[in-house]
Image 1 (cartoon, rainbow, N blue to C red):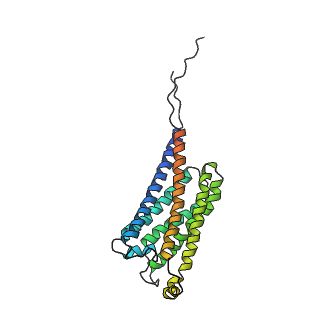
Image 2: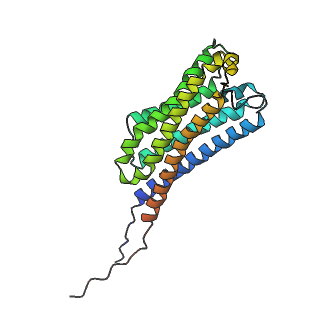
Image 3: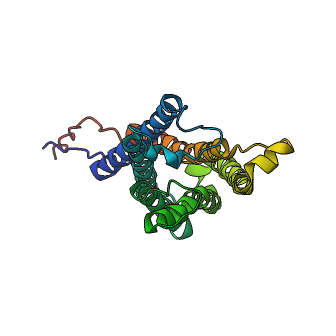
Length: 247
C-alpha cells in the first residue's frame, strides 16, 4: 500500500502570503520614492525642494495626483509590512502596531486634506493636514524605536534591529531640526540677514527618506525570511512504504 509523506502545506502557504506582502511593500515604497523624485525634478521651479514642504505639490498643476498617489502608496507599504510581520510571527503587537497603523492613517489623511496655500491655517482641511503631517513626521520613529527591542527578542529578526534603530533615530533628529527651522519661516528676511536660510523642505524630505528606510528595511528582511521559509518547507517527493514482511 502506498503511503504519501506530507510537507507541511499550511506552513508553505503561510510563507507565500508573507512573501507576497513583502513584495507589495517594497513595490509600493519604490512607487512612492520614484514619484517624489519625479515631483522634485519636474516641479522644482514651482516648489523649491530646499525651502518648501512636499505637501505644496498639490497646488501645482499636474502635481496633486502624483503626490496623493505617493502618500497612499507609502501607507500601503507600511500596512503590508505590518500584516506580513504579524503573520510571520514577529512580536510587534501593542504600541509598535498602533503607532505604525496611525502613521499610515496620517499619510492618507494628509493626502486627502491639503493644507492651506497661505502662511495662515484657517480651513478645516488645513488643520487636519497639519495634525496629520505632525503624525507623519513623528510616529514612525517612535514605532521603530518601540519595535526594535521586541524584534531583538526573536533571533530571526535580530539582524534588522540595528538598521531600524539607526533609521528611526535619524528620522527623529531630522524632524526635530525641521521643526526648529519652522521658526525661520516666521521671519525669513531677518534670519537671512544673519546667514541662516530656510532649508525646511530639504529637512522634511530627508526625514521622510529615513522613515521610508525603516519600512524598506523591515520589508526586505520579511522577504528574506519568507523566502528562506519557503525553501525549507519545499514539498518532498512521495515515498512508497515497503510491503510488510511475509510471516
